[in-house]
Length: 250
Image (cartoon, rainbow, N blue to C red):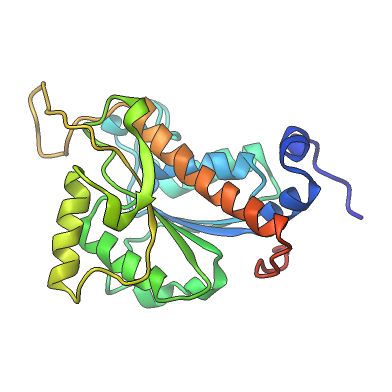
């Protein structure tokens, strides 16, 4: 038996050996490494997930510093996925990372084989890409999808919750996503779980073209909640002896 990595001692103590081993076999693809996806990635690596795909086309800009994990005044200008990958390897040098500086959309979807992944995390802001990613992921029976709805203009962490998409209420992104689905074949029949908040706020400062206001604690909680959904599902599978998880990456 391979020697256990000591960084996961407390995780194993809480979740047990079977779940930790299942986490190390788990493969998660994260699309969008901003204020939600970056924190999700870190939480998954710290929890022992063995392989991640990181997908984001952007470089870090100064307005990312208030909420994105890898964004600091020293990393402005760096490629987001590369800066995040460097941090994740500092946490666990053994984690396998598939790093892609790429936009996910209809023109690039064929480059992603979702059958290689156990979970897909949707943390994309672009409505068009988000809708296409959700349809693509749900078309693969072996994939479990968890999606973030709008984390911007949210301040109260105690309103953040999870439910299937059809139960999301009062979220502007979910409303726009429903409309997009209806325009492109209807709302997917296969249910998927979302992290969302019904909180309604307005920008109080001068709004510019870069989007709505955000704060770190709510975007991070969205990301941590998505990671928590993965870990809880892996624990559930491990507790019932589910054999759907693939062998550990080498």
